[in-house]
Length: 497
Length: 117
Ligand SMILES: Cc1cc2nc3c(=O)[nH]c(=O)nc-3n(C[C@H](O)[C@H](O)[C@H](O)COP(=O)(O)O)c2cc1C
Image (tube, rainbow over all chains, first blue to last red; front, side):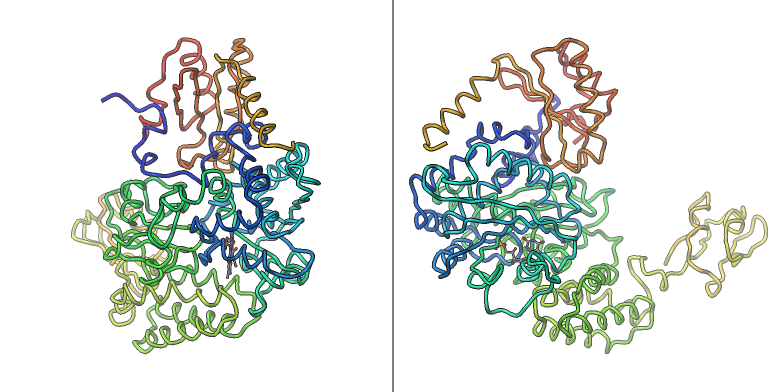
């Protein structure tokens, strides 16, 4: 068969549907002319010259677009409440904080197609009656920041921002605000506090930001990817968009595929695509013929999905039903070499570090959970710990102030549910089936040993004994489990068990 | 910019401004591309195109197309719609592509995406 020369011919690209990413990799993001060449700013013109504010909101409502920042709130309904909110000054905010470890969907949109976000924010401003917008972007995204500023300046130069846009008297301006990278600052209210110059901490809801947001004024806050969907919806019509996706969730979702998967990278798929298709047909499956174990969706606040649920359709409700969530689009694949206790510990550790400390369940509770996981991983766990983890996790979920604490226990709860046998192996048998938890490992020399002494020479604690050409043995008490002997063995006689 | 027609006219003008025989090389210059070494690749392309006097060839930057594992990469868009995706590039390979693909009109099979994935 002839070689494929173009990315468009690749099967894993053909299975995708690009709406939010449509210009990424095709246009020069630093030239507004290229955006205009591919229908750029036509949606803004249509919104102002043809639809009017109510018409825009009706279109977004009818499209079925839901927030891509995690919670999946219907965007049209959010905009309508902003439109109906009383008060002179209103604001639009784009949430470009993107704090989930391993996620880079929003960064790719900002770097590859910044005008799509600027056009969408201007449409949103027109729809709700705001004249000022802010993009809250993390300072660790210098290329995105640079390209956004270039795009804002160019849009001003052409009259898509500034005074009297499309002769309507509507005025809109966008400023960048740089975040310092705290995960909690991606939470809507903490983000707003940060823009106001306060410490980035969440506050109780209500009031909702739609009514009382930035400086107490009605504020509509949406995620980067949510905004990137807006110009195509306005341009091509809500009917077109509502025809893509599943019953309850319309359109597409971008995922950052990572972990133990052959084709890591960014994918954009119609919502409702089965998880199996994303991992095997698009992602190319698991490297080195290893067995799939689980996939984590929703970042540090999501859950681990086992192979029994690989046929789940990716949408907000279905993922929630099986203890995970859509989240912002991180998708991390794990294989047989990953220990689920260790994975749960890894994600929980992230939440412990990023907890802002304001509410007790999140500050103290997650720490307590982590210490129990540490105990289990070091072989000191008892069976009651598993029940305690479960009930503590549920309490934290129910009583935390913001989404960080409300979701932080998810990785633990979902692994407890689907991989309880692994926890029990750590607790009852004091073994780590995947061979990850150092304290539970034992290095062991098998009959394959040729007695060459290579292991003995590299052992830093001299715990290997044996005569030349005789079977060697490791003293398990003295062994520090560094693995040096295993690497040195020329005949692969040393195993972990 | 006051009317829809004005915007469409501008779009048409931009399209008309592109020479019909223009060849575009789009280099992936998002964070993924740059961290894999796209800047020297882009520079090598620019230098080589200029040195060989290939006035029809425009070297431009673009964002992330999603296959970050194959960066640095670039795509050649030719009149008539042919599109070729070269992946895992280095400045040396990029110069080779200019010489083979753009001057001798041979696709270098082993550097294309199909040979990798
Ligand atoms: C701890 C925490 C971190 C969050 N981080 C982000 C983020 O980085 N980006 C984002 O868009 N939304 C983030 N969110 C969700 C926002 O609070 C908010 O729901 C979202 O930006 C609304 O936009 P959308 O309706 O378009 O999704 C976070 C929420 C929590 C609780």
